[in-house]
Image 1 (tube, one colour):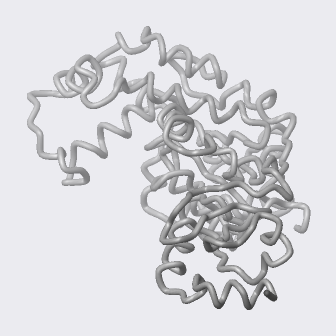
Image 2: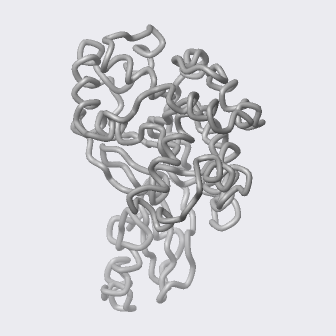
Length: 326
């Protein structure tokens, strides 16, 4: 068990089997730690945004354009990433069933004459997104060397059929002891009513009967091709073996280098150093920081260090003289 990864990043398209992955992680005694932050280091599983449904394009565009370091201080490469996939027809079908029924969303009560009108509204009008283009973005996560890709179909086959391919077994071995795979996934699959509705192939029949035009959608096809799904039939994807061959987990953040995160915050400069955030009061010279680093306010999160600064007396000239011995 010691060789298994216990720090996990979960990225999941909506309606692709997120609850099942979460149940597996919980049954592995992993705790959800929330959104990944600069100094996240505790064992458990994390999201990259406020949800597991993290758009690749939006996430990295924001990091590149709106952060001081382009996100390089986030320990993304230091965690085992898990991205799950599911046949796009079933994702689309599940999305329609969930989003427009039973007040599940703020727009559940919209009225349509029939399913074809509903599909046309979501697909042709692009509702609030280009559905399959947005879904295809999630394949980018599978390109990271520290991410494994797990298909909903493979997990379902393990849980209900007791059938597991060598590729799936190898992939899951990063998370689960091989001898516990069947029992763990079966227990995880049966732990919520949600999974009892997770049938495969219903989306294919739904589209055939109502809107077969989607089978020709550019991004529907690209998603299928990337993971190795057939366009009009649901089986386990064929390309995950090649996606999951080389997993490399490493901490790419700089060591022994002071990096300023924010200047002039209530008479402090906030810096990053070796997986910790520190508040350095004005008046402390650069050469004195390293020698006295443990004496300064520290935190694992930017908001936390700002709170400490606002509630601390460790900024006066007398305090600075005391810690520096002058």
